[in-house]
Length: 130
Image 1 (tube, rainbow, N blue to C red):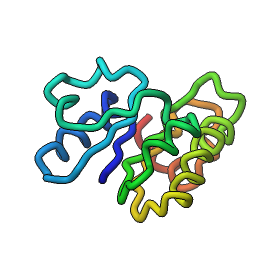
Image 2: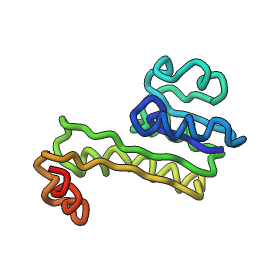
Image 3: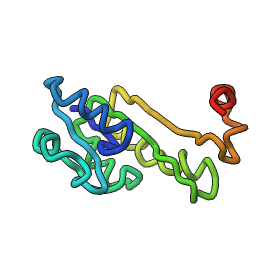
Image 4: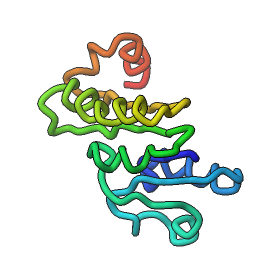
């Protein structure tokens, strides 16, 4: 079982489309399943809610072998820690609890944000794109 977060987002929908014909059982987490094309919704199990919600990720990761994890940017967050670590903490705990073996994680620092200059190696790549 592969779980995909953000299945209607810019990256997540591409992951979903690429995996639909893989033969793997797929489960998606979506706040609004209507954002997923009907042809895809019919072929996956949908867990409705936010993947920042501990109950949602606990249900979604049960029996999962792999997870595509994307922490969405939150321009209203108090800090980078709150935006990424706080959002991801419930998932990290659920990964352990459900013995998820593989996680592919995508994050976004956000070019032009106050914390972009303090993003370690990512800072270098952001500088080249301005």
